[in-house]
Length: 385
Ligand SMILES: Cc1cc2nc3c(=O)[nH]c(=O)nc-3n(C[C@H](O)[C@H](O)[C@H](O)COP(=O)(O)OP(=O)(O)OC[C@H]3O[C@@H](n4cnc5c(N)ncnc54)[C@H](O)[C@@H]3O)c2cc1C
Image (cartoon, rainbow, N blue to C red):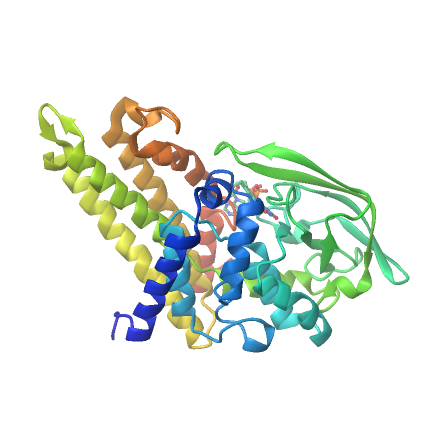
């Protein structure tokens, strides 16, 4: 077994690194990382990434991809996340792959090239107050009306709706069918009449949203895949698309190591303190495990297999490792750790303080840690439901 990168993969890593050094402006980092949103600088940056095919490297060339492997996809994601550029996009990781697998040829031609070019922002429209972990309980109604569906109801925690061009919506088209059978996937133009977006502020300080639909008319041609099979399509897309780059964790650890070499306690660098050294060593080992999980998933995908319980293992381990990393850093910083970005006394410019609040959210969205452990128990260990 060879864990090394090929010469071509190494070259790709260098190219991506050089691209980021040139194109990732402070505005891009401000918008994607601190505000967790797309602004003008982000749109321009994603357009340039799209020009190179790096938003959708595994997609077929005819739809804007490069037909590269998932390992190469991971290399690009690792570099971007290490350099604090967030490219967690519903368009490329949820909507696009589902259209690719389940959409008609007409839909592929219409939606995939602009997604690959980084021109379209999508927001994920799954969760409702009674339907989070139990997604099949979703109840927003899409009623058949000639060439349209008319949609009424609400969604909650729909991040990105305040700037997205389209909503990737799970809606109930067949209320009399069993709950796993009556859901369909629709693409909704966020400028449609009857949509209201209200902010919900996370503890990390960035915005997610409630979204209200009041008689919103959506053309039937925007239904993706098979009517009533949306829940199954969502599940397949999730299984294929759970890749977890460890770039950000590696960057926070590198910054923390650098800090301990500079900062002094009782006349000595923190880096000579045996407790600090052991904590850093433990974190380095756990982040390496996360990296191996990520490579394993990329490898499984490249074999054409579905990594479902393996993805759950990777998600729960990485998000909980990040939690542990920010806890460790907060202990190393002492009271200074609570200072936010902007204070001249904030260690590492407040990155850890920010992540300490953000990481809690990572263990909730895209499936909570409990749900991930359920998946590992059922599908990985074969335990009864
Ligand atoms: C910051 C943020 C951003 C989000 N962005 C989006 C978005 O863009 N689009 C979108 O559609 N959704 C989004 N979500 C919603 C997210 O996917 C849900 O919050 C998540 O799936 C959990 O659902 P819930 O909040 O309804 O909690 P619940 O499902 O009600 O769970 C409550 C608690 O019970 C536990 N639990 C539930 N069921 C089980 C079980 N069977 N076994 C063991 N424990 C269980 C959970 O782990 C959790 O601890 C976001 C959430 C957050 C916090």
